[in-house]
Image (cartoon, rainbow, N blue to C red; front, side, top):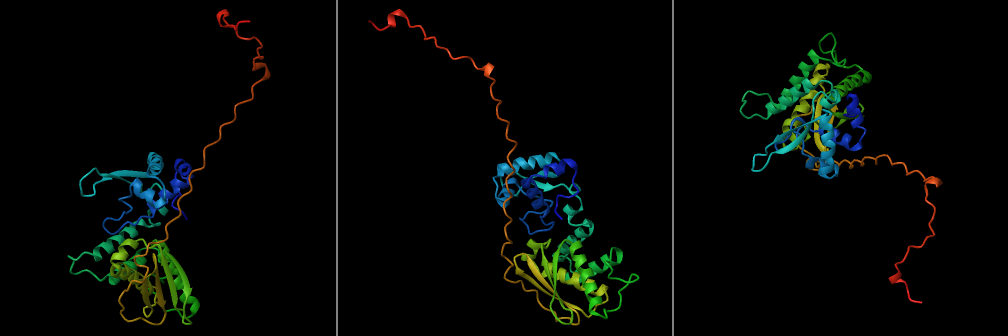
Length: 319
């Protein structure tokens, strides 16, 4: 599902352009919380920054941005970088104009709570704060009790542990649904006879922050999964997290009958590798070719003249 759904009629017409679609998709894909100096969803990007990402000249990008701003799909503001010079004009997606997809899933309020939870885990002044894993587990338990539990709970409480592999996989499927709701793109594969599962997590909403503070972001992720397992009646199941096995990719191994010992979160070789750069958007198709000029009617063509121009007598050649 792309970020261009649920737009108005005029916006949909504008987004038939591949360039404008790419601009909006990139602005929508910015994280809500990022390392200082990196662009965020609310802060937006300049035309030059977008041009670098999309492989287009900033003048071309600015032309398309002006049309998106006029349609109300994109907004702009001026932001000072802290140094001397003029403030930079940055563009951002207007909240509400692109529907739920553009706002971090169908439940943007809980998404913002998760971002706040991460920010709190980074606050050194809060001496009584929970560990990132504890905070993640507490958040997901509260989320399941007061929202859509995706079939993980029974009568408002944890069900009994799964008695068959089918029951276990149904619970894992509910957890995968939760991950998708929270903005992740998980792939699932079985990795053992006991039903151990490897979840490949892509498109982390907090990717930039995770590179700098993996112990915080990945700790919260491990807490989310462990809290969901506890709520689903699987307190003996464990989660082993392997961050950055590739650029922007992590593995979460869910162990059905084993809780791994407390293990440090060690980023893999993909921690600082840049994700694959998206292909440059194709230029807009040329406008309609004007019709050729109609052929002239034969009556409109003047007849050829045979009259020689008169030559003044003094310029005639002598006999």
